[in-house]
Image (cartoon, rainbow, N blue to C red; front, side, top):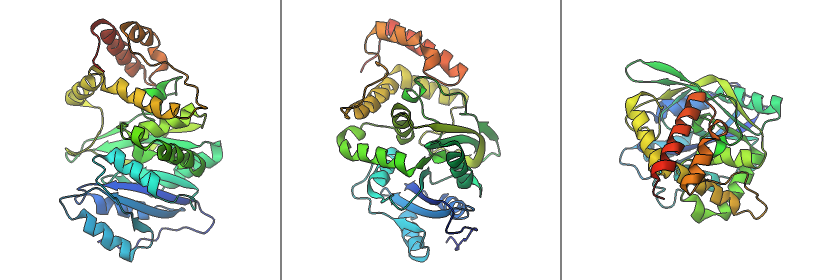
Length: 314
């Protein structure tokens, strides 16, 4: 059981809500929650949504919530079927009005004590609305690797990738309120979104909210066999993501995001997503605008060129 952890905080420190999605998380969740409660110079509240699990994590969270006032387990309703839908459930249900900032947490990482404070400092100092950062991935073998997502943002990168792992995100109340309202307006459309972090980043960029990607890392990003996404390293990860792109699933996710944004009659899309071989060829020629990292721009060009020749199923 997590012991009560009271890191230094005062009434003037930022009020932060952390949305934590849980599913069969018993092997890691205690260490994760401890690291959140130990955050320094912020007033923390954790809201947990638990998909039906076969381990004891639901009872563990309920027991913790009884003894720790900063932890709330929300009613999940029906099974969300995925981590993303569980996060969307949290966004819809949690009353975020008392909080200055809202962030996401996975169930299996470890946060350094200054993680949240560094994020809120960046938002306050730079007049940004959204924040994400690099992470340090680690494996049970002892291997560690810095995952760099802090390349310069491009014209359309938000339609084709997230701003980094969602567990690094911190959003202002204004931005999260706008995202929440759109999800409440489009519940059926949002069921087609596979990545909550990608959607939040795309929403922010399309509606001219300012986003900062920090080149520093303030957390350990655990890698194991049950990761929903995980780090894109190694041949297996490359083949998995290549299949995702070549099958058309990736571009369909972009189209689903655009569909939610377009449900706002005031929204004017800044891009036309491809549907014909010629469209894919045109997009290939604009690859430098579609991803942040040069290597990813090259892959993007290659995939679009392949799809322009062989086509994909939608």
